[in-house]
Amino acid sequence: MTNITRLFDFPYYQLEKYNLPDALVTKYDGEWIKTSTQEYLDKANALSRGLLRLGVNKNDKIAIISSTNRTEWHMTDIGVLQTGAQTVPLYPTISSEDYEYILNHSESSYCFVSDQEVYDKLIAVKKNIPNLKEIYSYNTIKGCKSWTEVLELGADTSNQDVVEDRKNNVSTTDLATIIYTSGTTGRPKGVMLTHQNIVSDVLMSAPRVPLRAGDTRALSFLPICHIFERMLTYLYQYYGISIYFAESIEKISDNLKEVHPHVMSVVPRLLEKVYDKIYAKGADLTGIKKRLFFWALDLGMNYKPYGENGAWYEFKLKIARKLIFSKWQEGLGGELELLVCGSAALQTRLSKVFCAAGIPVMEGYGLTETSPVISVNDMRNKGFRVGSVGKVLDGVTVKIAEDGEILCQGSNVMVGYYKDEAQTNEVIKDGYFHTGDIGEFDADGFLKITDRKKEMFKTSGGKYIAPQMLENHFKQSRFIEQIMVIGDGEKMPAAFIQPSFEFLTEWSHRKGINLGATNNEIITNELVVKRIQKEVDAINERFGNWEKVKRFELTADLWSIEGGHLTPTMKLKRKIIVEKYKDLYAKIYS
Image (tube, rainbow, N blue to C red; front, side, top):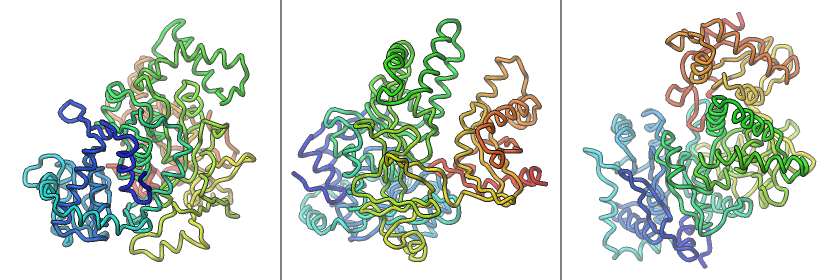
């Protein structure tokens, strides 16, 4: 049996143990095209041979930028790693300037892209990237070389022995990838992860994730350039799970019904949107159907695992699952057994209600710098607790510093930031990686995250405010799409709020109110301001007087990655948002 010590060992392990006919599945021109484990490796090896003929050397850097997750990405990943070179995966949504900076900083010599939009952004700055020899595209793009040219270069197998030699000379402690963190401030940092970092994290996570080996389908749609989804795809390969790649976020609903996945990863924002759509459909029901829907929902909000609520609750839950929650399952493909959730804090109500619906959400915690998983919930063996990110992985050590910061040690911790010893030394001290997150363990060893250390602030009255915790509560309101709590050094906390314009439109139709035609008209409508004030007042009751959001201002524009409000992982770019709305800030605190 293949001994897994390097990332490219995973598909070879899968070939020996499972040899799937549908290891990787991508939709082309309306048809799902299956790639077997054998074909996956055949093409990865052809790519390796082609790269060697292009002159790629050990420790060269090769960038991959794809707007969608796809079979070719994984073939490229394995093909590059087998040569001893490293991959530099990039977000398709970042700017041309960021491409220029990252490709120069990493000294990438080749780049594989997915489509015209990404190619155009690269071409706009290519003259400023002297190390970049060539761009290859997965899709047909006029004027751009096709990635099949590299495969054709490698069609001649006479240098496969050189590939094998390169593979044999890749050590588990060798650098595998540089992942540039999107960063909420300043230039992105290149996180250096070795084969051992990611492989160990996969193997330590494997016993925690209740996946059925060999006959399971996963739907992959979170950005593969992010370590969370990438690590999961290696885990799927290890378990012999067929990976289907969603076409886009817009088509995710259709893809769920076509693929009928058993497992998929999510971020809290997606679950919030799924829940809001389900809630809206329930609100449109009438009579007994509506009463049943909200009865089941209330039941779900009180969910506790392992029968803690007693036999009568479990009996009612069984009825709710049959009458109401089964429809939720159908909407998600009908066979979903597990959602793996990461990237940001999940509202406890969502964890409860989806678990009650028979779709357990296993929330975990980690960072790019930790490959990424540090801890994760596991429904089995009482390893799950609502409101926590689970227990720390066996093989990882976590301790809480005096100021509450989570410190981590283990084989999954990065070797450092690329070409940045000063920043590396800032976060790795005394053998521990300083996560920047504030957390605590409960009596049973479950880890809870309370906030980001850098995002906590102090009012002029000397009271500490944890904005993420407040924001998570406010986002439970269907009227609030996005919120950022402000007030560093000010006398009170306040907030910028981007309302849910979609829900406000629906609400106004139900009430027979004309809110206006534009977002600007909506946010200045007195009824809207009063209604959101009512939401803020109700949620404020959960907090101490010093924490309450005393004032807010609504924003007309939609907060987005493209608009600069959010990072590609949907985190708030706080400094940029404050700068964008400095007039509103002055209005609040003047």
